[in-house]
Length: 434
Image: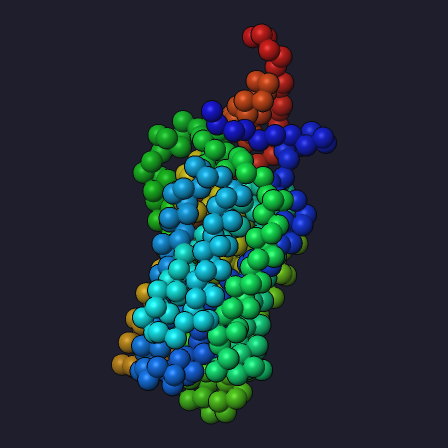
């Protein structure tokens, strides 16, 4: 029997999260952001300790990223069976085991396995919180998802700063500390309701139009996958190559490094700034506008004197795309239960696949080609986002959801372009009534 949403005393659907669990989940997002940003600064220490080449020392981040892709798809496959609370519990424990093993271990192959295990838990946490915030916090969900991913970005800023203070040679305690920090959100999972899961809610919301429109739905999902892979390619491209490009333009390496830190900080600020707008603007508008401004910012980086500021502006525009794109996808394809898992996995896969390809282009044409290469990635991202917004805006569906609670029927009129569904009629029926 499918679990339907229960009602709060005020008559609305009961949130899946308590207030403490919301705050703890934001801390969990900060931890996974810090883990993703921690490997880069400790590459020199790993290289010196184990006698590795630069590229080999970087395999730890690749192993964690690959684990995150597997974690998203794997935890998604068992989510319905074990429920929301058990999913996050398993994800945090997996991440804890991986980080502590990585911090304590002195054998390189085993450390790569530990990084992969860390990635499994990281992917589960990212997927679960992103999806549950959207479906389990009502009208506040989109805004709080921006806040959660803003905390993720805060972790990517704080982790390198912490390594700069304690020194890269002390990477072990840093990984262990982050693992232990995840015990706080783990202790707060009791504030998360086990059910309904996203799959159960999606099943309740399934409409014949979605079942009959498989080809249209596939096209929409391909569009979202493309947006995520391409914008992650731009994001990682700037993060990896901005220092080198600015140095070639005549800036000192210190200035170039600070500018890159400002880029990551701007990305975090962008998510916090958009949070209050997420309840007033549609997700489609936010994502498409962000893609447009990202493209303009990258093109401005072609002007040498504007490059540092242009990259920071690009970070400000890139930040809102990930959380608001998930909100847009959730509103556009609520019955496609696998959609968000595939899109998040595609985004993580893009962060693994595109940096080497971008590096090959730069090796052939020089780092001066970075802005033009990024612009080539930005333009189709903008085009696909605009095309999706137009395509989905023209499709409006009427959805009838039977909650199963006392035979109540809720009728919604929803714009597939990302507008929040609002109940237009609620007709409770007593048992035995026709």
